[in-house]
Length: 307
Image 1 (tube, helix red, strand yellow):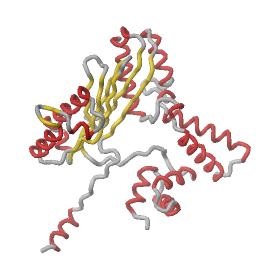
Image 2: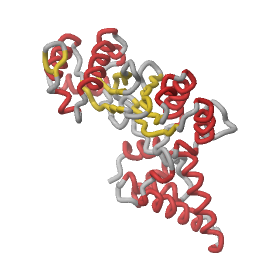
Image 3: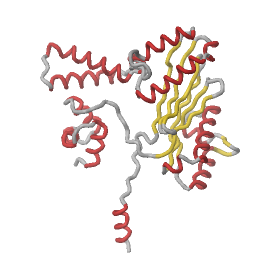
């Protein structure tokens, strides 16, 4: 049985029509990922990205060490946007980000046992929950340490999106260059705006490449394209995928006439150092979390039925 909720979720992810989404889910026996592929094969899906539903509240906070060698972004969730905007909540998130930067926990579980303000992070979190009156959870974090290079972060929309980036630099003196610092911030903004999934095409897993090729071939066949040009169509589709999802091949958001790769090379020449994009992380608050939808009429009816 295909639920209306699943159909709505698929429509939100792909931009396809309601009936097309229902047919795809039925054909895929309810498998959401397979249904997305089916819609793409038929040319009905608007995008390939796995955009999770953004429903939970909270903020993404960043911390960058004074020497720009260590950086952190952390997502801390709460129940309401009102609490997420309070100074006390923001201060708590900033404290947690600094703890992660300075003590380097392996994961959220390890973070809970670390010390902050004379108590464990777990106990400190419990005290904040009691004081603020909402459930609060430290969901995830990313921590980069640059052995040769710098890290930087960009927070967008008051904490709705956070990006952490590591740029390699083989010239220690160039790490303090103002132009390099601007470049790092611009690259973090690139990730926030263009949402790449990989740095370069060599980073794309073989199974992802095969999946994209199969989808492109099936779509072309469904459209009645001649067999002799299928390989060319598949290659073209794959090149388009690389340009959309591989950061170095994306159009640079501040200069639409060049790619990120070209801007990287230009900056490297200007600062006198070999530069590389080594790593990035991008968090969007509530990504992939579905918040419970309340219906006041149903709640009132349920309460009335209980009396």
